[in-house]
Length: 306
Image (cartoon, rainbow, N blue to C red; front, side, top):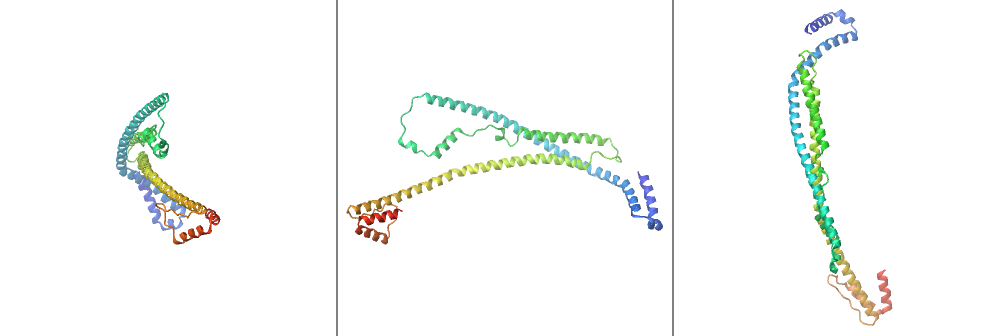
């Protein structure tokens, strides 16, 4: 190769040093001579670059394979534990269901209990629902409830790992049989591609675990906010009921006053606890209505109701 490059280099130099040959040469002629030199030199430069960079890239790929192997073991352990936990949970749920069915059958066959208190019907439905749900407890039917990784995830990870390991073993054996001046089969770009596959599959699984943890965190935080929301709703409902009661009492008092006026008795205005004191104008209006008689008072009251 050195002799071939030296010979072509000498003829090209002689051509370039001849001003007459260069003056007659066309662009195609110059391009052919340049490509002839590149055709001999570029492969040598590429093989040298590969030889220099290959050891470091192979070492990095081996390290990635070791990390992936440890990750495979960790995922396999979690998947196995999740499958075992899911199986135990299923048996526990089946046992609870059988126990609940037996208890329900026993209650149906038992004598009817004494009449419940009249206030039992006033039980808060939200509280009853929450109590029922809490007594039953969570249900587990899927290994995903116990581990973010599935059997399919483990299979994909193992597949990528085994293919990368087998590829490196095969290419290293083939590269070991070649001389430095021969075209390499274990290329740097291919080594980097295998390392990228390993990194991608591990990163995807790690992100999957993070997303599941975030989802569980959001679910727990939203569930913890529900009681306070229900409490607020009940408080507002209580306040509204109290206000409605006060309004009803005030209307009842007004109606009693009108009835007293019609019967000839003096009108009486009752101020219940929590009601606002009527203004001076309202008091004067009530006095006028009492003097003007029952018919006018009745028409006025109907107009106010409308």
